[in-house]
Length: 400
Image 1 (cartoon, one colour):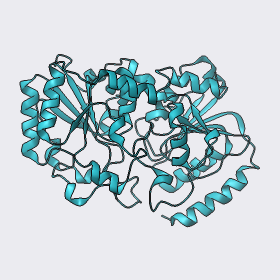
Image 2 (cartoon, one colour; image 1 turned 120 degrees about the vertical axis):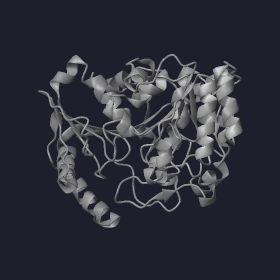
Image 3 (spheres, helix red, strand yellow; image 1 turned 90 degrees about the vertical axis):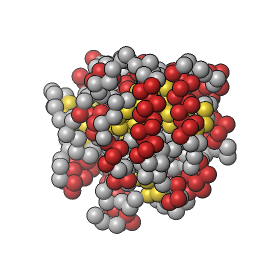
Image 4 (cartoon, one colour; image 1 turned 30 degrees about the horizontal axis):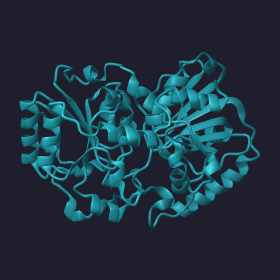
């Protein structure tokens, strides 16, 4: 793999050429970069292809080779290769010839021409620092015509993260949030009973991440905060077994969904063992069962997370949220937050140890909730719109 500096120079030259290459006015590219087709890109794609007007366009889906999405139709082509170098060439071709480009979580750094509309769908409403706000990160991230924010209050933060003009930040909501209010039987597809008292979803953000196989591992916390489980709060296998027993006693179930860029080599084998009231899932697990993450989130009675953007989305349903903050000082020192005091924007129980976690799970199971009004307040700050975000975005871009 070539060095980043050379890669960016080559892409810069291609960007100059992009100004002179004719665009196919009816061609739309859904690019999914380092992920499988997922998140905002998949939510927008799935919505658009259901609309009658989509038949007037040639739609291309391209990015990381995705074995779960390969079926072509008359006007939809899944165009990725298992060969990494060939795939890069294919991606550049589609970027240079498409009128509309939608992507999230990374793209090839080629500036769109004036004839193109390129939309960075982003990866949710930020709490933690990213891209231009991180120490030691160089380079440019403004390779789009527009990017999304969930409310007017976040325009300046999104602008700072990507180093772009605030005029490029449009408040339209996140397409993935539309899925929170749809029911596609996600629990049943995962063979999880709907007869539990409560179903909890634990979504820890990445602490040790590996964006792709060629990049070095990124560590966002101090080494002394690492647990044997690879997760916050739970220090060892004994804690995991104790939590499972607690859930069993309460007739509740816990799903642990690992972050897509988390370095899974730090998750020990014993975390994947079969337990009566717990399961751990990866992106591949969901895709293999045809379960969209946001359909699953919408079916869960409570969210447990930390500094992940997902909780801003979950506020739309005003359900209990528990925040694991045992390594917050370490995370703040190593990565940082966009707010001076992030706790002000985290409306829910703060979990510092396993006993706080057990107490939170018990309280939610017993329908004890002291944060409903605070959740509504923060949701109004963070979310201008509740749903119909895909429709709103496509109308803004003139595609509906």
